[in-house]
Length: 194
Length: 36
Image (tube, rainbow over all chains, first blue to last red; front, side):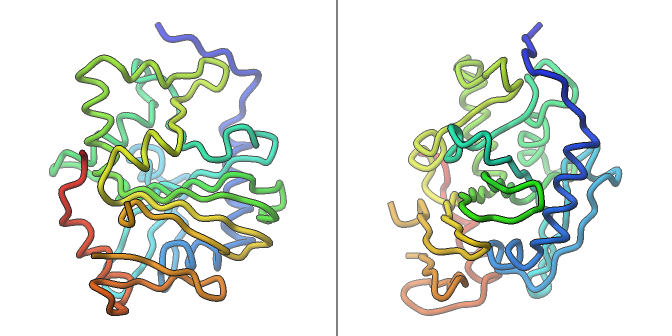
């Protein structure tokens, strides 16, 4: 069984942090997604079971979003993309991602991770990673099949940590990085440009 | 073929040099062959 070396962890404390961010910074989510509106469904069964935290409405398209935010104290990993919990566990986010390859179940269409978000939801100096889930799922599937997925697992964080290089250059499309200062997007890098 | 620009904190979406709506950009891009 995989090790989980994290200190005490509160699911609900983290949910409060995420909800504070959504309330304080909905406009930033809209800007990052190019969305007209965003509906928070955090703590619903779709969040718990399918990993969908919210729905971004873009024209007539409704896009499921897995929203992740990470505190500034994790600055060391500010360019990383994270999947929580080891694959052996039922609540591993790896399962959520791999569901994107199944046409018979719901999964988030995009994963939006914002690193460096303050306790009050403010983004003084943040990075954001937006990944089209099915693109990433194919990559995860490959890593699973060649038995290299565990090389990304960090027991202290109980998560898989993927660097920018891991996701940005291993896919042809669907991965965007953004730099954010004072709640405003100031720059971007897209692997479409590779 | 697709690209984006950040202008005054907002993302602008382009296909083949033409500015498009975000949903058109996402739809076009999702048809790519994705993993190298």
